[in-house]
Image (cartoon, rainbow, N blue to C red; front, side, top):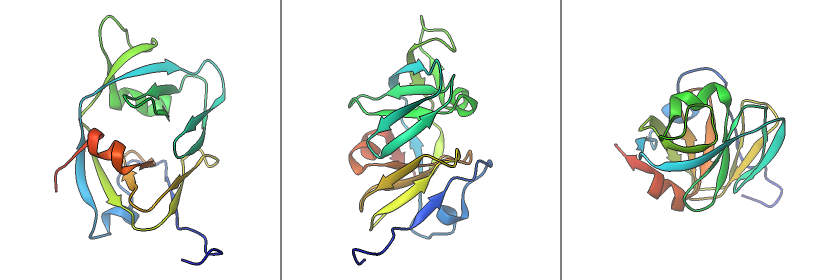
Length: 157
């Protein structure tokens, strides 16, 4: 890729189901998220979250999570309950410790830089060669580094 070339852009659809951009690629794998505890806060108002892959816009009520390596990311309020459960004494909707659910995803390890436009139409993530393009099956795409992917997901095939 020349210095002037634009990396491919993958767009989150906001619609349930897996993207044909991943499902039609014969290199994709099916994976399942490991059950892991994460720390969660809920955005009290609109804000931005600096993730390792880029600046993400959050709406009031969106979950802002912190992983075991200190990485931060946002999960929309709409999808949070499908992906995480509170660990007592934390109650649903309160800040505290949550457990990630073993949801299935599609993933494609990329061989060149790429970008992802999130469903909000304004947050853009940047991936490097060897990063994973992840399709969560709920209309959202993400970028996960190789180091985080290997400790977060189990490849099923």
